[in-house]
Image (cartoon, rainbow, N blue to C red; front, side, top):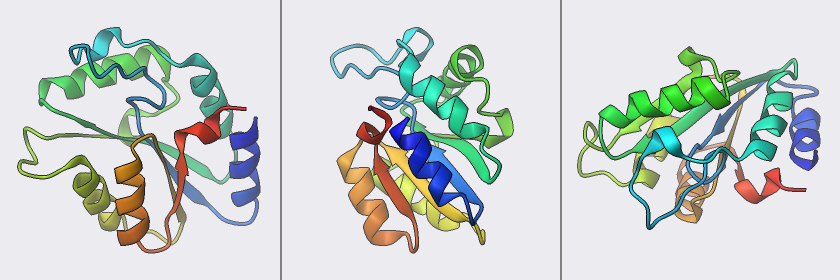
Length: 152
């Protein structure tokens, strides 16, 4: 429960918005396999820990995920409904590269996070080092965690 304790302490005196990536964080990511999101293996230990985090009073937990094709947005939503329904539908941001063209995943996430207007502390959990680096360098005041923080 290392990550739970980090977020509990962080949220003890302020509200936070916690954005969580899907692929490689709560769903398995095998580079060599087709992107069949409906059949990705859920990473249950992480899913259960994030469910506990979602119950903390000052934590607003959300998904921030990228996919290649528009139809995959629905696949990811179906997967979340099945394995992590505590991510409310209105708190799921799934962006397709088919819609946002000529932009890398780090750029898409950085741009999205810069568009979030809030007085709350914004936190991102991701497994992509380039995303984490770009977000740290370009999003003011954000706290980032590598997905390895979800493992005790």
